[in-house]
Length: 136
Image 1 (tube, rainbow, N blue to C red):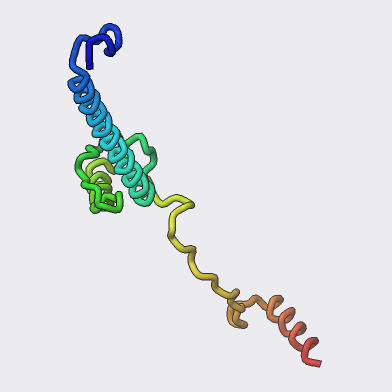
Image 2 (cartoon, one colour):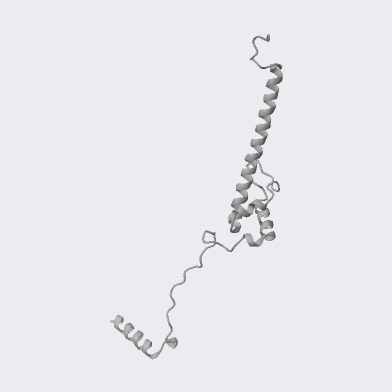
């Protein structure tokens, strides 16, 4: 290429400009990958923290996100362990179980009939009359 075909103001070699541009793009790609990994790690830790009963998700800012290594599936392999250690270190950030927890309610029990020995005389007479009415 002659100097006449170069754009005005470009005194350098076009190959050097392309290399510099490629390096800048590679740097931006590396930064974007790091940001994406950081977001995925933060999301994984949020899920585990909610499961552990964290009161305020802002408390996760105290965690070092480089602690957990991402697997090829994009998950933190030891997220539950990290949150468990975090819970032991900072228990005030975690509350009791919430209404959205996976704890099951106690099983329903059928109403228990009152025994005759537990009834007063009036209750016994009323229950005896009711039973006798329904027999015939």
